[in-house]
Every structure is written in structure tokens, then in C-alpha cells.
Length: 367
Image (tube, rainbow, N blue to C red; front, side, top):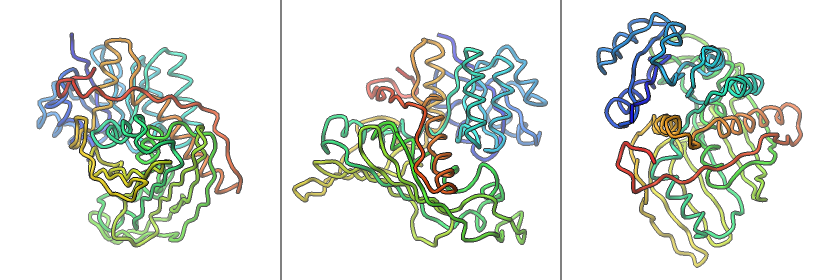
């Protein structure tokens, strides 16, 4: 079976792990070419990973008949424009999270992909890693009984003290929910199922941010998005969840995700990672450490893309699909709307979980 060829739009910081994994880990995909608004980035990526083609811009990439899937790893507010252009050129698209910076933009991507008969997938794919896959199997096997609810917390004080380019986190398409929410919500959907409605309270407690990291030390960013979300989710199975994300709080840690059942509680690994400690607290009051039962425990970004590529070859559904990324976007949009309108927001999309990963497959090869 021939490999599926990937064209990169964007060679920023996150591109490194994609390049590393596609060129060295996943055996059914290959990088055919790269482009970036800063040509030096594309040149460095091509040199480091032996990429055969460097495109002058994304339109040259889209015109290349060898490109099967466009990997869109631009900034969040650019996702819509790049994905729409790629789809219009007849290319399948896999995008970094979120699907788009607004629900309206997401609707346009979904409509165009359907009209063109093209596939759209997207990050995060951490839910395919050893940690969350193991947790889902425990839940599917009834270990914690019927799902009562879940709770996730991502608490920190933002990016301006350490990130080299933190401004976009506080602009359109940014904020703690649109930045980190996709990891938590994608995990919640895979563990607890689809969401029927949401509500939230939102706020912005630091209207300006002073950057103290280089190279933008001393610059002041005016915050344009909510930087605290306290959201509630009503799942279609009756469970009730909460997700608290903020860039406004000083806190020693930031990741926590728990799933509550009628027979116990499951402590889930950081959804921004592919694995981590899994603990089960039973109704009898016993805390158990649970070993992982699946592959891909380390940083396997690109796993969802490799799964999409296999689906393109075989015609089967794929796991990190647009049904999932769109449902996540609609939930986040619902949180934002609820914060403004002070009411519960019903979801229109219906989420469908995909099968668990196959732990018997050779590493780097998808089922």
C-alpha cells in the first residue's frame, strides 16, 4: 500500500513533533513538502527532516497533485482561511485545534468539505494515546458503573512570562477555553459521550498583559477574549460535567480530569498528554493504580493524522474527524454565548464516538 503524502502549511514550534513522528514513527504517511510565511522556517524543517519540497506559499502546495492531505498548523485565527483554501483546491485537511476560531467559520468549513466530498480531521489526538484509551475501556467495561458526571480543570496565569510569542493567546481565537479546552472536551466526549447543552460564566480579570519573555519583553497586550470560563455540560446520557479553564489564576499545577460513576471514580491523565497516572477509587474506598493497556504513551502528535490517512486509503471512518472537532467547537462557542447571554445553550450537532484503538497493531501502523 502506498504512503499518504502530507503537505505542511506552517513550520512553527508545534511542527517539530509532527515532522519527527511522521518521518520516523508512522509508517503509512510521509511528508512531501512544507511552506511557511517565514521561509527560513520551511528551509530549516526541510533540511532537518529531509523533506523533498519547499513551496513558496500555500497555494503552490495546494496545486501540487502529489499532496494528499494538507496539515494546517497555523495560528488559530488562520485555521479557517487555510482550510477553506485547501478544500477549494480539492485537498483533504487535517487542522491543529481548534477547527476554527468561531462557530460561523466552522460551519463554512463543514459545508465546503461536504460539498466537495473531502475529509476534514483535526487535533487534539491525545485521546488516542495509551492513557485516555485505557480509561475509556475501563468505562466501556463498566468498571465505574453508569456515568454520573465529570470535571476538568486547567488553571494557570497565562503565557506572557515564558512563551516567545504570547500575544495571540489573548486575541480572537485565543483564551484558555479555545486554547486548552479542546484537549479536555475531546477527552470528555470520548469518555462520557456527546453533549446536549451547555452553560457558563466567563470573565476577564486582567485586561492587559505585560510580556516578560523574549523577544517581546516589555510589550503590553490588550486582552480581547474571556480569560476565565466556568462551564457546565449536560451530556446526552444524562451525566453532568464541569470544565474550568483560566489564564487568570496563580496555581502550582494546571491539569486535572476526573470521571464519576455509580461504582467509583476514575482519575484520568492530563488530556494534553498521551499518557500519565491512571487511578481508580472504588465504592469500597480503595485507591488503585491502573496500568495502561494501549500503545502510544509518549508524545505521538500526528497519530490522528496517521489514522485519517489510513481511512483515506481504506474508506473506513477515522477517529479524529470533523464530527468531533466541530462538536468541540460548538461546545466552546456555547460556553462563550452562555457567558454573554446568561442562559443554557442547546447543541445542534450530534456526536458519535469512534472505536477504540487496536492495541495488537504494529507500532506506527493503524488498523
